[in-house]
Image 1 (cartoon, rainbow, N blue to C red):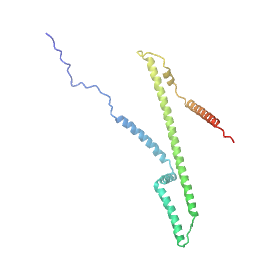
Image 2 (cartoon, rainbow, N blue to C red):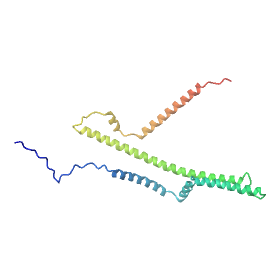
Image 3 (cartoon, one colour):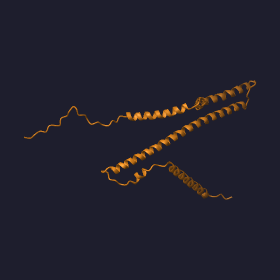
Image 4 (cartoon, rainbow, N blue to C red):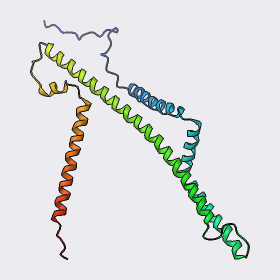
Length: 214
């Protein structure tokens, strides 16, 4: 007699193999933390501003709006109208053509506007410098972490008996930390070489131009 093999029973206590959770919740949390860190940075910089800097910042924002341009044009038109129509009627005016007082007022306003804009640009440049310094620090820290990870992986590869130990020149080069001073010196050298090549090409182009006979 042939025996029938019964299928493997399924018990209620058995659970399916857990699958990795690919939900985007973790990524959203990381993005939210990054956004919050950036927002905190800007809030901290805003809190460092004095009341005078806040007032100048608000005024500079107003200068960049179309309303300011419309007000300036309207002021000039009104000034000219007030000083032209009474003159046509034979009345005295306080600033006849060519409107010397108007030129003075516009010059003073332009000086104030330029000063406010320069102050705003200096503050933005300082903020941008801080951000660039922060990016540099983060990049250097990331490079150090990557170098450490490569060192740990190379040690693991050498210690595992089932992995063939071999020399990897590229991995050995990546194990060495990057020296920022060497990188900056190389960048300066490449810039100098590029500048010399450009000057030489310009000199050759000038020498190759045909000379005009008198």
